[in-house]
Image (tube, rainbow, N blue to C red; front, top):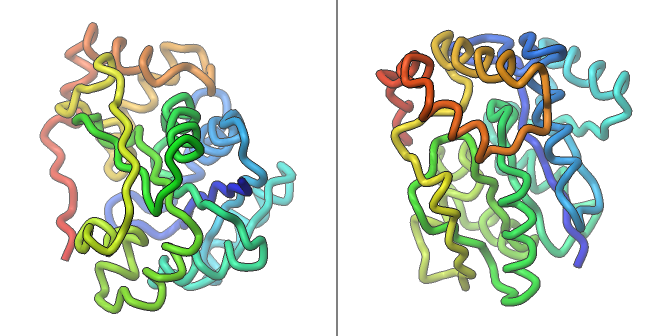
Length: 241
């Protein structure tokens, strides 16, 4: 079962430009994301997929400096970027991660892979309301290819797997139940605004730059420190259109 993790990353952001290379703990945001993805078992390659825009040259340079595979493709057509990144490897499965999730749950990713091995399908659905920023998505490459050819709307091209959720009957699904310990949907552990950055920085500083701190410990820390959790509690996620 050949599996890739593809991390979408770009410097452009309407609310927090340059966020993926902002300082975090003793390193930068992208290092957290890559390091955590590299902990996921049974993955063949971890690849950062950025755009061909000159402003993203720094992401490619960071990848080269840290010996991380990097692919460059369309900025706006993220679905095409994913598909074109994965196609040369001809994987069985692709795991989607976004670079604005510095505390992505790599232990949950392990469980997702095991679930797909036990019950092969087109996509894994994680049941349970989790904080934004922890979950990864796993789809078969054949499904990614199908979505690439059938997803025509801007929302499909920007959000990669959105078509599979909009048309669930077209895909075979495997289900996994998230741990009760991380089912805290009121928490926001992602990076899109300066308030999100303040929260993530507070978490990283508390755990003394431990890039691999478990997501469960991060959730517990925020529950025990509501003053930190409320830093970004008012932030609304941009709607999918």
